[in-house]
Length: 119
Image 1: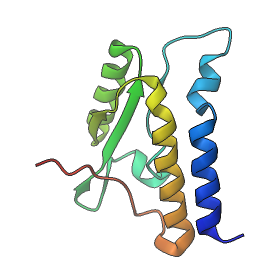
Image 2 (image 1 turned 90 degrees about the vertical axis):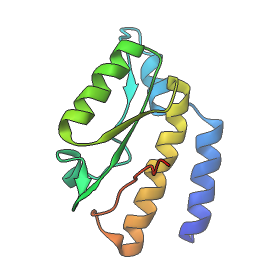
Image 3 (image 1 turned 135 degrees about the vertical axis):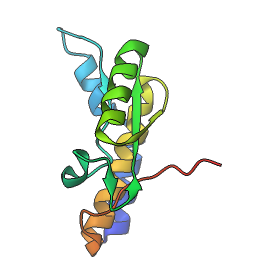
Image 4 (image 1 turned 30 degrees about the vertical axis):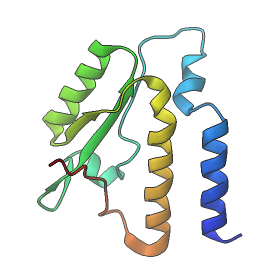
């Protein structure tokens, strides 16, 4: 199956299904959940940048205090944290993870990431 077709199917499935955070949220022993770090490859997670470029940490969650804690953690690592809203936005962050994996599969390696450019 061509990768482009797989990407479309994954996107459709993502839009119609619960996010992984949604599945965790349904667990009986629930605490505050925050979605973060799925748009960054492992070698870049401990430094928050690629070369001299600071990466963006996209964060979603319903608990403001928990999101602030995660935002500070990402800031301490070196990321530029961005609050993407409530936990239901996690499905879109997961789609961003799919896109970055597609880029990896096209041979771009792990030295790629997202950076939100602000004017």
